[in-house]
Image (tube, rainbow, N blue to C red; front, side):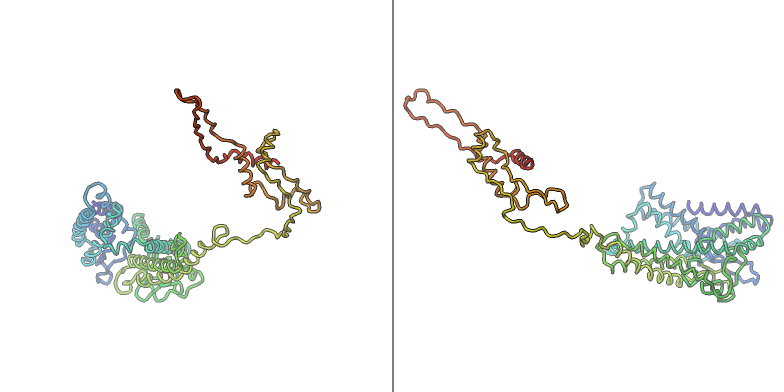
Length: 518
């Protein structure tokens, strides 16, 4: 199903262009052969072009990356829907989707062999399975997240589950996306700067609207390739413009063998670079900053060495991703001078790894230090005391300390007999007037006196409360003599021992309120 949709989509597009073309070279059969060749080119398969000026067959291996999205998305969608709809295990779905797709690919390779752009059988023998396997694995994994980890050995699975590697993948992916964004920015700036040359080349290629539409579609399909080329340009190694010609920020060396195409018209001119081209170095610096930011954990108990190692691993991941993209975005357009076109994968990947790791490691360590810095009010170090210094208060003398009358049992009893509330706190000597020269204008309160909550006073109050509160249980009435007993027989009256009472909380609160009132 996925292979049929991909072939059908390209066949419809090619047939529309063939019908609208005023100069059809062949019938509908030739258009369908071209559609099959383009479908194979979308998988990275090299095509062979026989109608050259020299008569020597020339390979066409520069794959438009936007065209690659068509088979990848279709295979992934087919595998995911097969897992969701049916009750088959993930391995069975993976095998069915991959084998079915490869059968259609073999038939398309055989069919394209009779057209103007046949496919190289050796190139198709490993490009088709590679794309089908990776896309099918992605589809099954998206529907069953536990399927792919279950195929790994236990030790490898435990290692992959560590937070360090998840953060490294995240940081590397963020750095690669930043590089691609910088490449897109460089591409757009170059197209605007060389706008007249790009427009002139586009209009001179063909004069009919169907041909211009075909050139426009090809240019749009090659935009992702140009973005990767721009990222490689910013990293420093640049990209090849044929055998012996390279474009870097420092200079464009050699003699580029460039075909007439709008995107190639936006390349910098030959000769040494300028400050505008040198500014492209800011792209990998920005990628390193982003990777370093994403390599820091939120936890505060992570060491600086662990953070630096995570950032370095993120740089390696970024280098690997950029190396793969550079390999996919490059390819030959012929023989001789056109045998090399695009960035060299190992140069681009190595430069991306070094740039990203070199910038991300110090940035990650600095970000962690900033996040884990001691903050006043939350850290272990107390904030500095900014209150103004005050003069020490002199110790009070015994003569100036107001005395509090001791409370005794007899005093409590006499107070009860005279109608005074026994719970009333003892009167306190009035505090002396505040010093008029102090300038405060308020009563400083008793100095050195015993408050109501001092231990000695509190014990005296509890003793008085226990003595005056009585018992909670009234005494039992005296029983009379049992019937039939002699009148003068002594009667034993049981006396219940009164439990030792614990004063209630209400009494203590009353005493506290009265003390504060006095």
